[in-house]
Length: 174
Length: 186
Image (tube, rainbow over all chains, first blue to last red; front, side, top):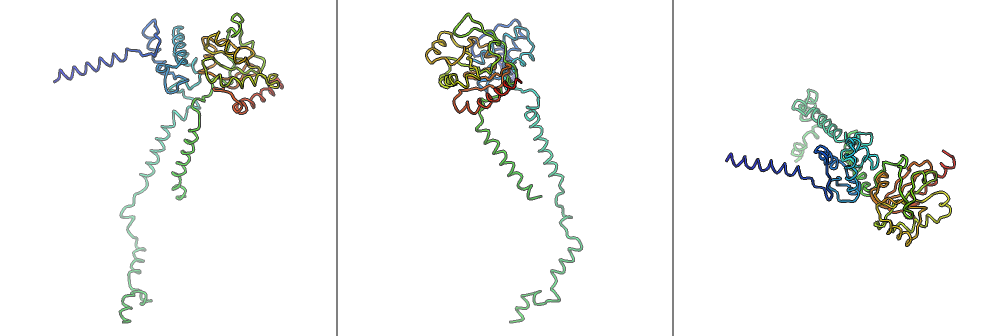
């Protein structure tokens, strides 16, 4: 039993490694001088968005512009540019739009802090509702003044006997 | 006060509805260019008709320039072409604005034939075979049209075909403003 579990575990672990080492670029193959550059290339091409097909990153897209940008990305990395320089290069030409993780700026504040703000508002609303005193038995009970008034209402009215108990007056009339 | 609070959710839902409804009619391809307000990028490329004649940014700057990115592989460019011809032959506009082409990621011979066949509205077309100028301009398709002022600053980028409606709405006011700016020497 234990052997079986171990076997499955190893298989799934191996498949994890296999799927990680295969780099699926739509068409071209790039040769990298070292493993680090290759990993950086993969990371950046996943991070950068294709300007033409907006829901795909550079690694995914088959469009000519994405191919151009992959080539440009490769050249920039071969030239020894840092990641931030590559990103700046792309942003200078295609705008913040090309970043799947937009940078924090006055334009993107709402993107970055909007969700946190909404959660905060939600928490405040919940707290306000919870802090409202629930109606307890004591609150519902009548105070002495109200008791007095109730008694008066229930007692047959001395001053106006006709109105106080219409059933009785009806009977008397009969 | 309590009554107002009771209606608050309704008001919020209506506001959200209005925002989302407006979103339906927005064009997601219409993204702000990173280059508006920046100088036109430097380049050194040959012209389409003269493979030996190199042109650069200096050949364009000084006038109000319309830079039209086009290619023979682009059907929308064919649609827009007659209107470009119309613009290029308008005597008043001709005095104010210079129209140049960028032949983007194309082959020289078919592009030359294209212009012979459909007539050539451009003063000249820059032959950008590799798309290097296109990349520096942030072009991601064709047609795209840039308005460059007399200082060489990119003032507008328009992705898509130009026709009468687009021209009146998107370009005419800006061109008017640029002509005034140029006359005032600012």
